[in-house]
Image (cartoon, rainbow, N blue to C red; front, side, top):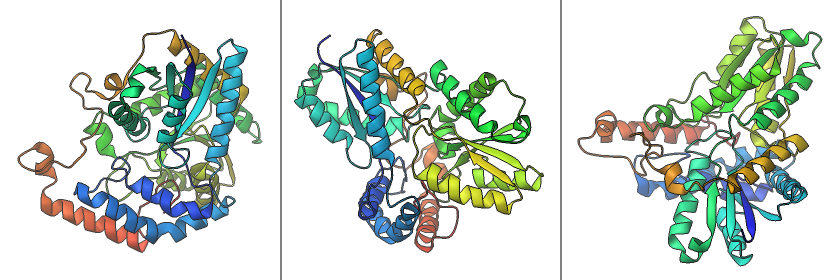
Length: 387
C-alpha cells in the first residue's frame, strides 16, 4: 500500500481581522460562489467588493472573537482522525486543504508530495455534495493534478458524499436528542433544520444533488431520533438577487413565531464545525429574529466538531475507501446520465436555451441590481454572515 495520506477539504476562514479582506477576495473570485455575466469581471469585481464590504464583515468576526475558529477546529479534527486511524492499525498522515484561506489546498498538495505519499484519500468535510463546496474543491484538485505530472504516481480516491452514513446520522440524532432534553416539554419543541443554500439553478439546471441529499439527511436523522417533534427544513445564507433554494431560514423563523411556536431548536444540518454561520448568523442574527417573532426558547444544536463517535465514523469511511475501487475526479465531475453536475464556466451567448433566458440586456440588469445591493448593503445579499 505504501505511505497513506488523508486530505480533509474545507472552506477556510479568516483567522484574524486583517485576513478578512483577502479572504473575501478569494471567496468572490470563485465563480461557483458568485457568478457574473462576464468572466473577465470576476477578479476585478471580487477585489472591489472585498474592499467595500470588509468593514461589515470584520464586525461580524469581531462579534465571535476576532476571527474564524474553523482552522483550529479542522486541525483538531485532523489530529483526532489520525489518532483514530492509528488505533485501527492504519499509519496514515492527515492533511488539511482549505479552499479560500490557509492552509490552501495547494499548500496541502505540496506537503503531500514532499512527504512521499503513495496513496491518498480525499475526504470533504461537507456531508452533502454540492458543486459549490465539494465540487469546487474537486475541480481545483483536478486542475492541480493535470498540471503536475509528479502527482500521477499518487493513487487517490475520493469520498464524494456521506449524507446517509449511519455513523453520521446517529451522532447528529444523539446531539439533537441531548438538546431537546433542555426544554421543559422535549417532545413539543419544533426542530428546525437549517442548511446552507445554493442557487436554485444549480439544482434545476445543473443537476446538483445537494437539495436531495440535505432532505435525505434530515429524514434519516428524524427516523433515528424516534421522537414525535414537528420538524421543518429551510436554507440560509443566500447571495445576491437570484433565486435560491426555498424556503429561506429567515422567512420560516418569522412564520413559526406568527404561528405561535415557542420552543425552537435549530440543527445546522450542513455544518460539522463551528464557524461564522453557526456562531454569528444562527446564534446572533437568527436568535434575535426568533425572539422578535415571539419564540421564547431558542436553542441551537452544537456542531459535532471532534466528537469521538463522529471522528470514528470518518475513520471508518477512510478505511473502507482504501479497500474499495478508487473513485477519481472524472467520475465525480463528469456528466452522469446526461445530467451536467458542474455548471458551465462562463455564461453562454448566442442561440442557446440559456441565452434565450439570459440575453445581454437582462444579464446587465441583474448585474446592476447585484452591484447596487452589494454596495448599499441593503437587500437579501448574505454569504456566510460576511455581508
